[in-house]
Image 1 (tube, rainbow over the protein chains, first blue to last red):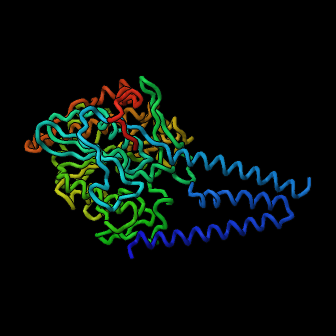
Image 2 (image 1 turned 45 degrees about the vertical axis):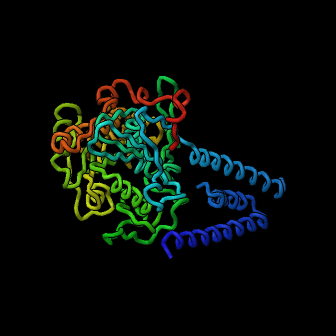
Image 3 (image 1 turned 180 degrees about the vertical axis):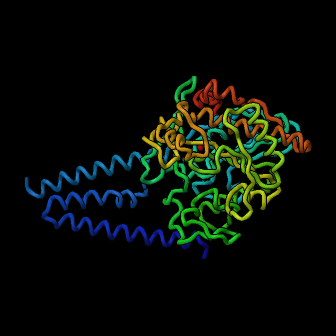
Length: 56
Length: 387
């Protein structure tokens, strides 16, 4: 198996991990009753969304 | 305000931020630079025509080939190795748009690491684009990073082991197109790109390869020609001629270190018949101690913090109030290549390369760069390409 294939497999796994953490943050955002925490979760989600969309 | 309303407002705010940032990143990534090739263009090929290692990848660059009417030598010009050094691709494009080969051949690639030009360096707040005024309007280029973007080459290894030397290099240098020469067919993106470039150099029987760069003033390899041992006499003579006759700031000449692998000036010379040169010029935008990081600094090369460092003798290049404007930096690269060719013609007449149509140092510094780029809207469409 060449390096590019290995890297592609790792990259796909990485996107699964990114999705997992994004969903965890969405869940926390939904359940929290604290406005400050909700703001924090929303801001932290931005780079995860951009990464999943392959924009940054 | 209840929590549901507050969350809705927060989501709208965060969503707007993501949408604005995303659209800016996307615009940068998808912008295509128009290139109007000189009327003496013979053909345009793709890098993948030389090796399938880059086929379908973002780094499958346009290869502009100009054949003169009389046989002679072949020179390959590489621009855009590090897209945070804009003078590299501007110098290459000056040749692509103006060259008239009278003898020999010129092969130009304006951007060898396109991936690195599609995103800027993370955390540095670099401008996305830079612009140059021309008689027909404003021309725009992508500004970029030193390394290929992780969107195209990821993950990096813990330690990058250079092929074929086995030398250990920094992990991120596996995405650095000037640490992955001579490349390998089944490697990562930059290794594949450089492998395809080596195939081009070998198949086109290049005699000279020139790799254009810029460097921070804090870096010791500055305003110089770095050359493989095969080209020492030519580089030494070119350096003396340019310093005595043309440049206000001298240009030096350095030998390519034999033990430092992955760089074009070492590996191209070692793995092909070509003589490899790499030229550096001062770019204050790259200095760690710079002030506001914007397009003004990139184009004017003026920065009072870098100047202050100069006053304390912390730099390897002089700098004053006039800075290092993009015209002067480009003019140095263009003049350096033309002088290297001139000297090479004397020392190796069977490999003569005579180029006309290229502006000299004075013409570029006095008229500005815009005078030497053509309008893609008015040019014959068969000569308009996009990088």
